[in-house]
Amino acid sequence: MKKSWFNLFDFTQKVNYKTEILAGITVAMTMMPESLSFAILAGFPPLMGLYAAFIMGLVTSIFGGRPGLISGGAGATVVVLIALMNSNGIEYVLAAVALAGVLQILTGLFRLGKFIRLVPQSVMYGFVNGLAVIIFMSQLGQFKTVVNGQTIWMRGEALWIMAGLTALTIAIITFVPRLTKAIPASLIAIIVIFLIVLGFNIDTRLVRDIASVSGGFPPFHVPQIPFNLDTLKIIFPYSLIMAGVGLTEGLLTLNLVDEITGTRGNGNRESIAQGSANILNGLFSGMGGCPMIAQTLVNLSAGARARLSGIIASLTILLIILYGAPVIELVPMAALTGVMIMVAIGTFEWVSFKIINKMPLPDIFVGILVAIITVYLHNLALAVLIGVIISALVFAWESSKRIRAKKYLDESGVKHYEIYGPLFFGSVAAFNEKFDLASDPKEIIIDFKDSRVADMSGIEALNKLTEKYRQAGKKLHLRHLSEDCRRLLKNADQIIDVNIIEDPAYHVAIEKMDRKA
Image 1 (tube, rainbow, N blue to C red):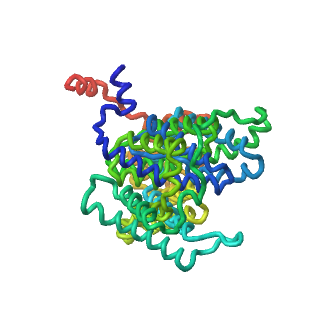
Image 2: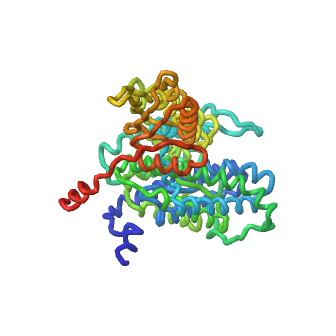
Image 3: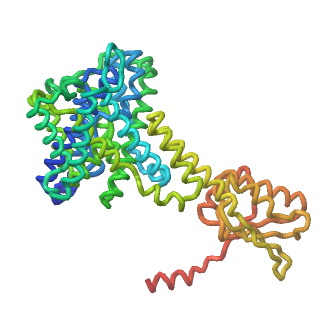
């Protein structure tokens, strides 16, 4: 019992405490401006973004599906709630966030997280590349300013200062790892730029120009809404979409971390942890969220591989809210922008360009389409869903062309059809074309040793074929059906009447083999 408790929190994992602590501080620095920006974008109080970053990060770091994964107040889930905020207000938003958490917990309890395995590699490439473009494009907003109520590009000295500091940040992140990896390059870059701006009193955009990060501990607050069916009708669609978007981005990010670290996470456990965190967000004034791929990659690039870095990041954000706001609000946005640009560059799957000429055309199309939808609609769940559907249709089409039949007459005058390939909705037409009803003898055997009846369309095809042979006064038998195929036919015995030839079972041989084993 004690051992399983330790394993639950990965206490037995070897931890490099210095690396984890420094990585956590770096993650916190990059997470705060993003969470604040998304909260402001959605019309929420700025602190709702930081509360979400603290709650999501802490709960999922401790109880989540794998070490190294970072969660916070993500834009992918917040965008879903903007319309609800505008129409019904913040109380309904908090209720929707909590309900989304309940749906995510149910997903984990019913072990539905495994369906993320159905996402093909081409969709993963498109998802990751599209996300990298989004991360990069979102940083360009830091080079804009508001003049007379209009947002325009910076000009003159302000632009050169912002660009120069951002370029210096990128240079530090690029070259510092060649000198030392003892401290994360991103954290060194943030500290250096902070000291330069402070020491030379450079006039540039700071964190405080986005919003204040000072506040108290997240307050407990039950959403003040009517608890009735009408309220459920209002918030459920938003909760469902938010839960879907969060789980999709979270489980795909989990798979990405699995590939980077060479380890395997637990999607169902991550779903439960994410749902629990969102319920707490709804009750403690957080805007909700999900795993954040950019901050996760910052964490991994800093060398973190345990849960401690995520916990440190969350506690750092809380300490900043309570005590450290006066200092953190002086951090230049150019430093954080440079860090995120490097994250975008590191996120992009550059290898996809190298292998594009080796990929099938449908996979290339799917990857590009998913990336385009991700970039232009900012809807990760929709992009992945469309990619999976197209990939499934392509697979069905290709599989439908693989069904073949070998035909021959035995010494008894019985005609045999040996079927190769799956019999399902896509291959039914090609299957029917294999048979020559007019010239076939009185008895026919269809051998499924190298085939399988996969769905109801296959059953119906056999039913119609049997009926045609019966009307022609001929007898049709099926042979070598697998156990699941027989079960499928048995379940459909009300609509199909076919003669199944039972294969002989050699019990003596089986017993002898068992004794030898």
